[in-house]
Amino acid sequence: MTTCGELMVRGVRWYQRHFSAHRAVPCCRYYPSCSNYAIQAVERFGACRGGLLAVLRLLRCRPWSRGGIDDVPQRFSVFYRFRWSKAHEEPRLTPLPDDEVKDSVR
Image 1 (spheres, rainbow, N blue to C red):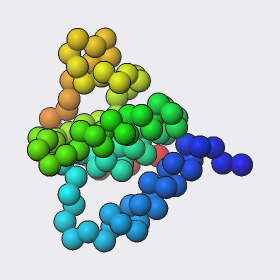
Image 2 (image 1 turned 180 degrees about the horizontal axis):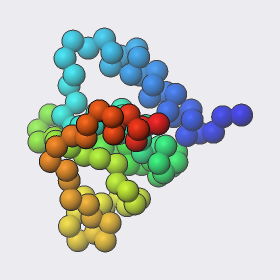
Image 3 (image 1 turned 120 degrees about the vertical axis):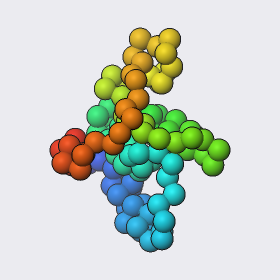
């Protein structure tokens, strides 16, 4: 029997194979992409909390946003991007090397 989180990850992987892979140019303003962020969030925090973080990320991903590097937080908090939050994390300025990204996704 599959869990809700596994079904969500399968749905995102399906989206990546059937829609995202056929685009000529990647259009996500953030790194990692919104779909990879959703997979990491669901795997780290489960379907409800990870799904909430993924939805909030999709709401931030709009044409007039600056974008940049936006990792899944280490501790769950909806407010991890605000300085006043106890879960605040400083954003990274450079992407992780490919080896570390592959290890963190697995």
